[in-house]
Length: 124
Length: 179
Ligand code: FES
Image (cartoon, rainbow over all chains, first blue to last red; front, side, top):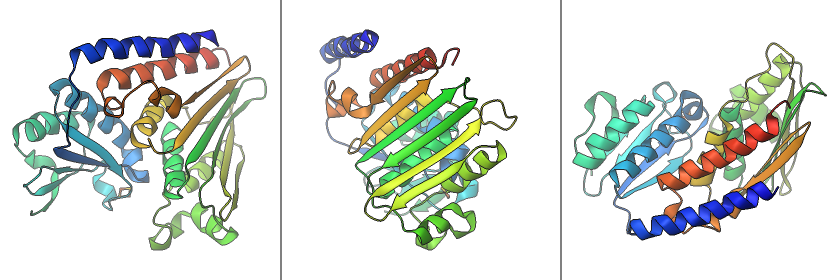
């Protein structure tokens, strides 16, 4: 099991490197909530979520990603909610990994709502 | 199957557990693939257990329980395995299900590392311990031991996610090889 210790050691080293480069991201601006109930997970919410985070990190955006259980629209899973402060809350459906990436680059980065995947809107 | 594990751990979280242990055993020798998920959440009485395993009951009253339990049960039954729940109110819940590895309907393990990463990202407040065992090895990994190396804001950064995923995957493959 010495391998394991090595690996955590690696993580420490990696962390030291990264800290030199990236400044800590302050505050949560945009909020994204991923529906991770049974049908969400079965429909691919886990992978959509990983794609989402991947893209957010690539674009270096300040986004707070959290999860919730069943949102209640099974047939449209995976579902995510995007809350941009001061704007309407948007619910997206059928969020595949690709759609997730689109949402990040259009909505989160540029404020453009990805219309074809919108399933709900709550006015601010 | 990795999806069902994720779903069942979500149940544990809804049951206010602060510790969840997932034990996966894959043994060619015993022709067995099994999963045991134990939590210290609020538990269920017999009636609730009955409801939780019946998909047609998963309505309002059991809102915080997903369909993971009926799924696990169904999968186990199809692959000639076992399914058991041991639960007591305020004592926590143990869910066990297993399959015959050689059975046609034995489900693929799936992307377990993605499941671990999801739990890692979303359940910082609880202790999640993953134990994997095969005929010739085992490994244990908990989310908390990784958090210790990081600051809170780093947890969702890509390099951490990638590292955790790879780390889990490597250990998993190492443990299950020739299992
Ligand atoms: S989990 Fe059922 S609608 Fe999402």
